[in-house]
Length: 137
Image 1 (cartoon, one colour):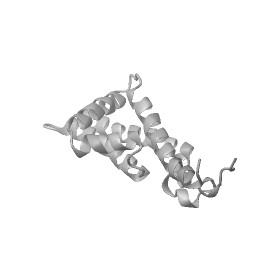
Image 2 (tube, rainbow, N blue to C red):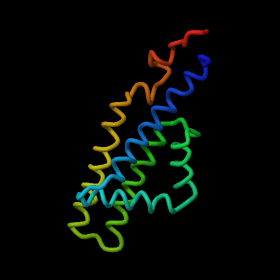
Image 3 (tube, rainbow, N blue to C red):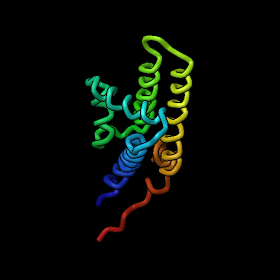
């Protein structure tokens, strides 16, 4: 594998691993109402089509290399879920669930990003693996 291809695959793998890990948590069974709302919001967000579906699909397929887009879409799903809860008539119970949904989203994505490596994901050119050359045979 060439040095260029190795450098190219590193942020792609981190982004896909982060998204896959987040989706696994979102779609796994949970008694938590906030997680259930996040689960439904994800389906509803993707069913909107257009940029709402092509962005996440591009991330998952490796066509979009930007981890920032991953974080933006992940929180867009969470905010969309909060909007679903608060419209047409907000209640105190729904506002609490909405706040827990944002907290839940943060609790899902940030530990995964930390495990993948913030530096490796967002600044791959500064990571030592970026400069590592694979041995030639």
